[in-house]
Image 1 (cartoon, rainbow, N blue to C red):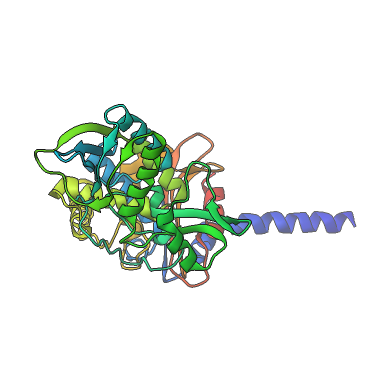
Image 2: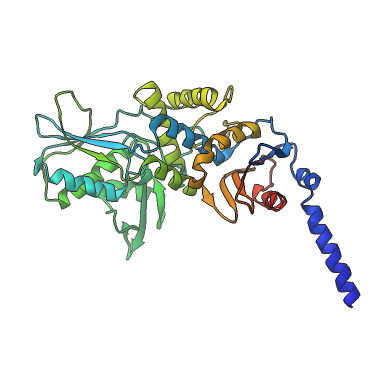
Length: 389
């Protein structure tokens, strides 16, 4: 019996070692996949299909993060401006703040209450983004990741609700359920959940939510909510700056992989580089210009900034160039068991990129794209990590 156990132990140990053999690891990478691993000294550890352009899915968000840091700056904070016109209308101008949530709107209302006590209409200026913004890969589903993009938004252009004793109530304490969204909620037939707004509802939802908070501040409102524009003669009374500097925004959205936030940054970067209004075309041009001039990627194929579109194509070598540039910011990525990483998932696409930290604390860049149906990057990577360590 002891001899059998010893033989079995020897067999298992050697099988495990074989599993970490470089040739065996590369055999897991098919013709529609790619693997590229580089040591901290620039040595190639694994390389297969590294020139092949594949669908990166949400790992593209690493490039979008770099683009935003380059165009907007590490410490950039999204502004939202408030004006008063000669008719005592309050005008809100948005610049695409992706983290404009209920708590921020409440703070805005409190600050406005220090300036004025009575207004007529609330006018919403969402002209910083063209309308509509159509993102390739985004559908009209009820999934929050299909939320539309807009210059003025609230709560990621989604509504979180539930039923209580037959009544629709908010599923988050800080956000009131306002009459404006009841029709949208009832249309879904759902009893609870977080749903995206329609494109033509986003700006008005934010305005109605602001109205609710202004009323709580005892500001008298005599008019309605309208879409309009700031004029040169209007008086700026308050400029709100997001609580979150850009690096923190990036850390949050790399963790949650929020498509809405990614494309808000993508659009804002395009507007910064090529002027307002922001458009998908300007975001694409900004990304291609940045990729070529700063990262060294020629002819970047990109359709949007989140990775939801299957039209985005990237080679493992090009993603490695992105990771090399992103290395000073690697701590913004998710970290688990000696790995800083970003994942990506679409139908029949599984990707993972980032940095493996060896026992000496040195970082190895890795890119693993699998576009083979049914294959998982998550199942292949542990062999790579074990090999590196």
